[in-house]
Length: 228
Image 1: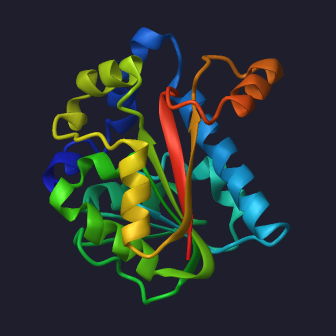
Image 2: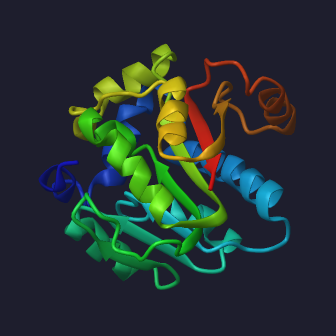
Image 3: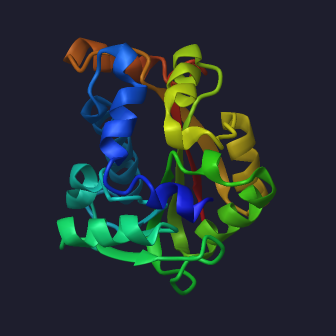
C-alpha cells in the first residue's frame, strides 16, 4: 500500500469517497452502515453476548469506527498513513490507533478475537495478498474470526465507483473466491462469503430481501469471514 497516497487524502477522504459515489444518489453513510450491520450480525452469531477485542487493519482516518465501536470490548486500528492515524487519534478517544509499516501488524500473536480489513486489500499489491492475510491470522486468537470486506468486481456500479475514486487508481479488485482461497491458504477454517448492497434502500423490507439473496455474487460489496 502507498503511504504517500493516503497521506495526501487524510483531510479530504470523506469528500473524495462521496464524489466517487455521487452518481448513485446515496451518501457515504449508507455504505458504512450497511457494512456495520453485516459485521454486527457476524459478531453476534459467533460470539453471542460476549464483546470481542477487535482490530481494524487499514483503518484510515477511522470513519467506520463510530458505527461499530459499541460491539467491541477493546477496539484498535492500524494504518500505513501516519497522517491518517494522527487525525483518527484526534477525533476518537475510545479506539487505540497505531501506524505500521504495511508488513507486520504491530501487535503480538493472538491479541484479538475479531480482525477485519475493510476495502483495503485492493490497495495491497497482489504479490503481498498472502502475507497480508497471514498477518491478520497471526494476531487473531484461536476461536476468533478474520473478516475481509471488499468491492465486488462482478458489480458494474462498483467498477464505476472505483474508477471515479482518486485514491483507487492503484486498485486491483479481488473476487470473493480469491479471498476465500487466500484465507484457506493462510490456515483459516470455514471461509464463507456474504454479498450485500444489492438495493439502495434501508427500509426494513429491502433489508429483509437482501438477507435472502446474500449468496448471489452480484452485490456491490462482499464480506468473507474465516475462523482460526
